[in-house]
Length: 146
Image (cartoon, rainbow, N blue to C red):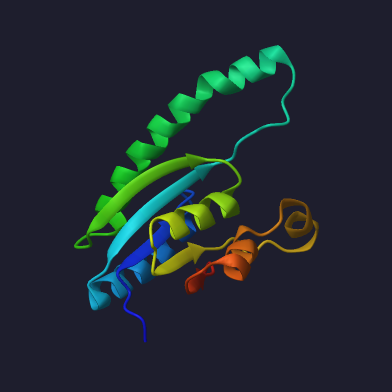
């Protein structure tokens, strides 16, 4: 069995992130692995009106700053005793950014919280978990809400 050295835990700051963190923490502690936290802010590229683009652009830095502070609190609450190697806020399509990050940073395993959307919502929104699972170079543990 390959050695698990690094675990990627993407977070959106929902209740299910804490559940997924519990699994990531246990695996990291058993394997002696470190955890990388990633939050992906969706990149809105369909705004073409100048005023809407200006409003969006003015909030990008703020969102990153808030996400970084939320990560610090999340680590303290949900990942005690685990080495956190990186905390990164990315912008783009979540599945693509997660996959690029995992490959570039030699991630051994991804622990991914899911939302288990169904019906039209799943069809329109799509499934980040499905895309990551199908295209990941490493094992992916999907953690569904209780």
